[in-house]
Image (cartoon, rainbow, N blue to C red):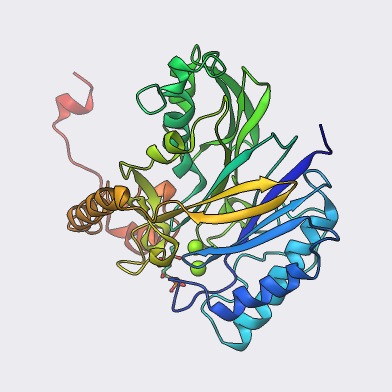
Length: 375
Ligand code: F6R
Ligand code: MG
Ligand code: MG
């Protein structure tokens, strides 16, 4: 058994091309060069990707999670990308970098982060998911399907290493606390929480049979950090696959029915999460619909062999068609819930101003005397 490897996915929206739809190739080139200078030094390997207006840096290294030097490298890379974005006057340049200076850990500074440390197995297939125009809770439903639902993952029933189930770590974003729940026996408790994806978010999953980490997701909510709307926290996650963990096909299968997620236009609507190829991951219609890409890698002594574009498969055409149909249907509902998110989950709202302006126009409701007396 060798030295442990750490996989860190660090992502940020540092400016959109055009509007909030995509990243500019020059920003990706900058990131590529900045990270290449550290390959073989701080980093074992890296891979730069994008989904919609978000840049995702996939970094492998031997320094463990929460390593200040690795976090600083990602921070400086995003700062440099922001410089390019400002020169090109890209939209919202630097929007996710909330701090002026780096302070030892990138958590809480704006970018999203998911990282895990483990001993590389004889073969280590990883799928890294990256989404745009949605929120971290968007992973709740597919993670449940992958790690707790035998209708999606037959391995839970028929693979002896998976039969003892998985432990879910849930982050309560509002109270900033964690709870761990064991499946299958606590599945109903788990669902009671993660059915509220705007507040309870799956942050990690562990195999009980192998005693290994299986998945980790970004969980930050920018608006809760910044205290104001600064864009959606388009999430990413890393899933290890095969040999006692869900098969690659079981992991991807969870996205074959596009489920409804919060996000889309102005971070304030509900829409289907469309699984798509990297080259299709540029949301346009109503700034959406929300997109997810899946990048597959084999790790080889920490080298990222890949990526393979896992949703670039005709087998997901039907999911995309259905997502378009759902998008067309739900759009007709305009500014009404449940297409529009409930007021407390909206990222933009004029409600306080409208309420204040019209406060004098509200009058008490006149009720018959009997009703007022509560008879
Ligand atoms: C959603 C998103 C976009 C913007 C919208 C308005 O996460 O990023 O839908 O909210 O394009 O953007 P502003 O307010 O910057 O004009
Ligand atoms: Mg943006
Ligand atoms: Mg985005």
